[in-house]
Length: 151
Image (tube, rainbow, N blue to C red):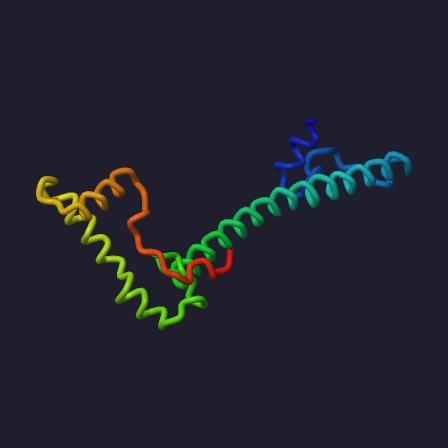
């Protein structure tokens, strides 16, 4: 365990931690055993183990990046209000998002309903405020083509 501990911390691997053995002054079997031990340590610990750990780190970052790309694609290619995909929208998608389902219009409705006296609300406004308070989106409009979009 001491060799593994020292071998991981030293820049040259296990060779920096154990005494040097020279073929000239030692028996061939001892030198060969040390040579095999150092190379096995290098292959198993330095190459394989560290590359496995680094591979897991890279894999995690790739997964995070792919999730971010999916979020960006959804933001650019789906209507926030009705969730229709750009490719299934029968009209110009940007016009759909800016005129029919302009996000800030819904924010304005939310702000209006939360800042007005509840006794001044119409029945439709009372329904929408109730949906907002119960965190439901049933009051958002649904496009007829929404069932044709891909799952």
